[in-house]
Amino acid sequence: MEPKRCTPRILFLGNNWVGWQVLQWLKNQGEEIVGLVVHPKQKQKYGEEIIDAAALDSLDIFDGSTLHQAETIEAIRVLQPDLGLSVFFGHILKEGFLSLFPQGCINLHPAYLPYNRGQYPNVWSIVEDTPAGASLHYIDAGIDTGAIIGRRKVDVEPIDTGKTLYHKLERASVDLLIEMWPQIRSGQATKVVQDSSEGTYHRTKDVERIDEIDLDETYTARDLINILRACTFPPYSGAYFVENGKRIYLRLELLYEEEL
Image 1 (tube, helix red, strand yellow):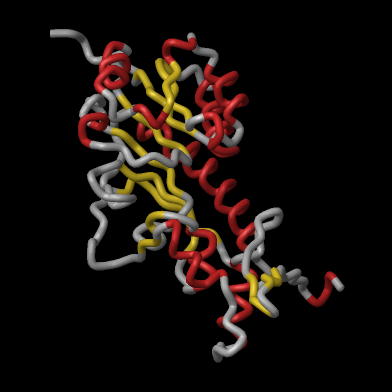
Image 2: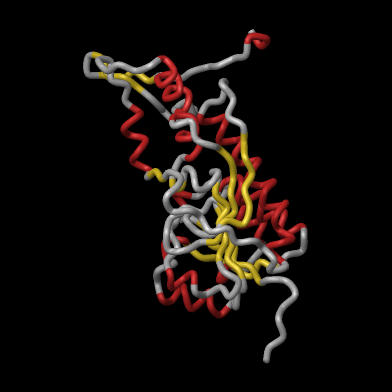
């Protein structure tokens, strides 16, 4: 029988600043990254930095849009990864891929699960007044529904916008991964099953129903302010209303009294 390895061979799937920061940290810890999966070039954020940090042969770097292909699955299998680690990675992972990892596949999600599964948790925590935070969880057949390893809550302040909250969630995500990593690498990570009757879920298109402010609709002041600040994320356009056939975009600047 082959002896059990002391440290896991990791296939890293990452995007964004958080993906870069986590990968750099793992490499600095001496962890064994045997393969890398990135977004297609046009959808990469910090893609070059992530690839440079991985310092892998190009044959061991894979396009995330090909993970359903038998050729890619086999190439990853040859690497003999023990653990998959997904960090701000946008592609849905299927059963054939997930079965490659004896120690499972783990995802770092910028939400306080089970709240805000899916897309734009920074927006919905503000609009729906749900808990904000970061979560590490095992990946199963659902979207952000797998057993939770650990969570970290983030306070949503009255002056937070979609952008400022997003950056808080980024930092909390990195801190949570670092905190929980000793348990993960030793195979001692907890598994708390999520209650399927609780929480919230949003798709990418759900923001379209709040982006347009209907000038003939009635909103409470709180609800309208929350929508406007949640959608404030320059340079993205955000919320708007239509007047004379043209879209007029709105952004909020929020300051505490002592900052005036």
